Image 1 (cartoon, one colour):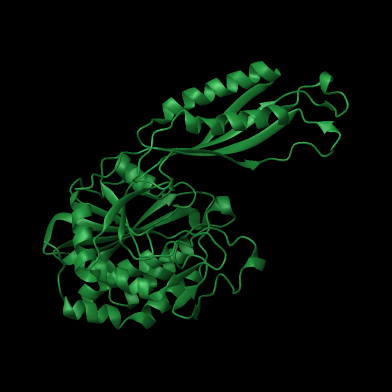
Image 2 (cartoon, helix red, strand yellow):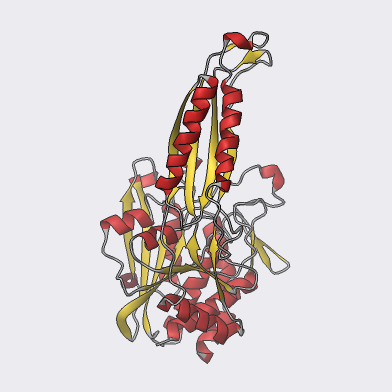
Length: 407
């Protein structure tokens, strides 16, 4: 391990180089006004080939998407053969990023990496390029030192994580036989500043778009209409109140309870003196895994029916995103091996947690693949002035390299 760690620690400039290259190729989904990940994937592949990975070690799995450039969403697998292939260790990062948001909130060009005070600033540098770069250099350290990892290492660079993974992990699970049940899966797409928490569970996710239809009328004659805005406000409060119905707590998560939050609201009328006949709002619900989404939707239906009866309106809703999955057992091999590597490299006693956000881990767990989400980061994903700490890239590469060495 001494030579491997020395290589990683001598590669800071190359890490910054790769981060800069990736950031310079915005990989936005068509839903976010982009044309996909192809340019970023091509730039990454060229870099890998120029820096020690062989052509035979890189395979592309392209999901068809007519909206994207070249009609594809690229998924790349890089293989480093190990002493054993009984199980493989997967490190899964995603290529796509989210939009910049209001450019006035950025202190630098979001598509050009700026290094300052030990940090790299730019869109995507943390989410998810930090994990991608750490995985690349942990694997590259074995290649450069001519050492075989204990088990075969697989790096997966996925498309489409930010808007649902239809063309990324979901497509790969449905259309390939890449994964084996005994494989170990690590997703460096969430964590904490010390790198001591291992995420083994996610809350179930339910996003709703609710449409309330009433009857528009003059603001002075509410008796002649059916106020869809009033009904929608009442409904959003009722849905928010489901937190008291699904009220169990699980200290694995923060917060420890299920949440039902009204979020985006659509424009309804253009005048103060108009009572709206239609109102549309959205709900972001994060539900403890002890409850099923069918249970929740049953109560949503009851709330909708109550509002329809009270206000004489019609309510319909659309599920715009849903995800539920079992937890990874805290004694799963991937948890034990990662915890041992964290202890060996950093002297930290790792602890298992659950999160309210969503990762590709949910898709894997649902298909019977126990996985963990882990990294060392400040969690500034999706924010203006997104940054990553260079030392965290190095520390995480050290940890991954140690995990690759375990029998």
